[in-house]
Image (cartoon, rainbow, N blue to C red):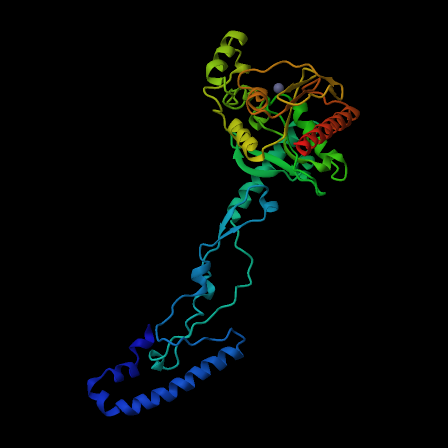
Length: 400
Ligand SMILES: [Zn+2]
């Protein structure tokens, strides 16, 4: 530092001058030391900065608050980027770095302990990773533009109004895999979680549109408000949005045959070849969970731990059910007709292997939406069934 090369420092260390001035210098230094210490304290107090503690030892303390905050990780509030928390690095505050070591007015500070200044916590907003936020916002906005332009029943505004949540996962063609999470507004005795998804087959338009209709119906003050919902309105965005809509994803894989069920390796390809005649619309993929959309759903199930999964399809006009618990008899005009499971289907993986009840709704038409009355009725029936099932689970837990 500059002041270490100062004139007094040189004088003090000059052998010719040391002897004759030794006592005088020492006396002067002591007096000046006391004066300067008092001045520093007074000045700092007047500047409304924290009082300086003069350490008893002469060791120079160089630690500054900036060094402590550099690299500190800050969690972004969830609502800003959806469910995906982003770690943000707060960069060093360059504009304040120069303020911590004021120029010494006198070289005598070489004898003094350097005052340790405590800088107040800077009153600035955390610096967020703008690039990450922009990617999240853009990818959801682009997805909504494409959905709104593709589906007759969902406008760009309808999609944007749902404020879909970026999850950081993407389809093969880099479309955002989004969710919408709704938590109970009232205190509930247990967190009963429902994962509900549409569009695992990209050409089943109605299965995607109805997700948005149900989200619009959602009333936090009604029965459904007691459940913890995670909507995944479009699981296979490439299937819907890459040119002409198709059942499979961009790799030509039927996602509902790609789940890593226990029998996948032994049966999935064999079944596809022998029972479907290698129908490309039913291709299970080259390996269990080979597809990013399926990997994402597996992660969602693992992380969310749903009590019930609802998956909407079309156009077989029925209600299917896999897994434990008592199936609903009907949901709207869809009546229970259990089809069994296919190797690598969601019912196989989640219903049979993971023992999570899977309700499959097959709407009557892929291209024509059910009537508004039917959309309402299906929602009411689904929630009523959940309510009975939810209460049954609660009763079972209470009696154990
Ligand atoms: Zn389907």
